[in-house]
Length: 337
Image (cartoon, rainbow, N blue to C red; front, side, top):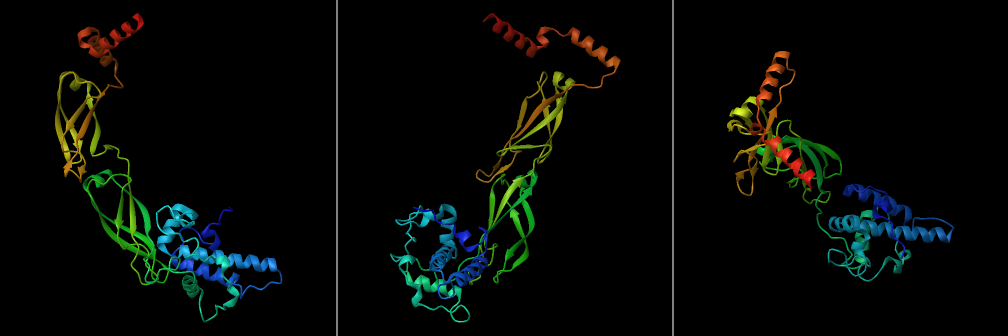
């Protein structure tokens, strides 16, 4: 079986075309290929034009109906093959049992100039081919829109309000710029989307507006790393404080917090601050803020400092070097294997 040509290609529109653009393209193609309008002495060309006319109307029947168009965008022609489509609904492929190939178009004279418009033609074909393939009457909702916005980690944690400007089509099919304020809920994650109902494109048939979907992207933060509803923050601790213990100030999303550092703290050690992380909308609680210790090694030492450090290092015993001693023990066991 030969593969069907893409419906968008048949109407010569792109996949993001609005309802008005699809209707305009349909009128153009229908005028061009209608059997009563197409003139040629070649029987082959006439047959090809009639075939093209049928394809144009089939494409319009699908793309002018939002539900069918959605099915086509998701499943392609397979959604309308004989026997049903992947969604489990009816088959639109044969239009109620009478295909276009069995229809004699020569008996009808459609006036594209002032009588029946190409738009009316779509409705006429719907009535010819039965209720299953007919266009749904009544207002059709406008198309949905989507856009991506970037927010800070702090905005994702605490929520807030944003103002966006974007373009959408009005009821006449013309593009217009609009401004909208909306709220960002606390705890929203990277990749989530917000739905702003009725802020998409306007309907050209008196139906409701489509929806606007906001896709959230969280900017990387210089200080904090988000892990689910937890926060990780690397905190520099002096060699002296790590060795003898002390107190350090840790930045959090709720302000600075002092924590105690026990003597002998090693680099990489994490201290948990409960309820200082990101708000979780499901549990209604905040996650944990982890302060991860990074021991600051002295740099740019002068000669006196180097001598003092060397003297100190020489006085250290094995019991003072727990990590090094443990490492050497592992090395010895390895080479004895």
